[in-house]
Amino acid sequence: MREFARVQDQALSLESFDPIQDFPECGGIDIFIGTVRNHHESKAVKALKYTSYTPVAEKMIRAIEQEIKEKYQVSYVRVIHRIGYLDVSETAIIAIAYAAHRREAFQACEEAVERVKHEVPIWKEEFFMDGTSQYVEGCCIRKDTAEPQAKAQQHTHHQHEHCTHEHTHE
Image 1 (spheres, one colour):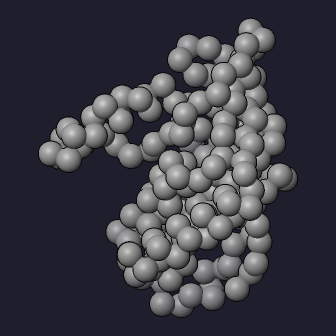
Image 2 (image 1 turned 60 degrees about the horizontal axis):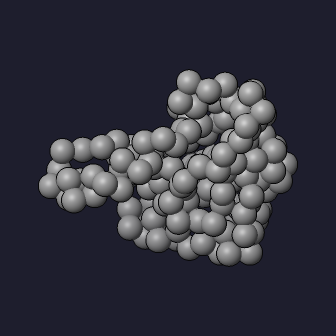
């Protein structure tokens, strides 16, 4: 198994991850790549800055990976998150999951991204073209649903509607 930091201050790459060839039992790979987009709530975004409490962030991401691996019975789950200044189109996060079947790969990858965004001490500050900036609350990529428990959490979901979602679906 390749060893690498889960919180990195240089450009992120898929080369960090173990190759699928090391997991012949797996028939599905799900990859999420989140990038910096050029707008937020009709304001032009110039750049983002991510900061973290890295020692805790590292431990938490590794724990999340292990919990998700066990929950979905997947062979491999890894997440790397960038810190520092990022320009538009730069990659902020990569999550990957290898599983025997696509459903488990999709679920594991989505939950990994969501949990890292919600639970790990990594903070995002947006810098706008007009010279202003603001910190953004932890974001959620989960789609709102009409399930009963979603209604109980509706207030929480509304708090996150203002978030910048720096997503590129690969």
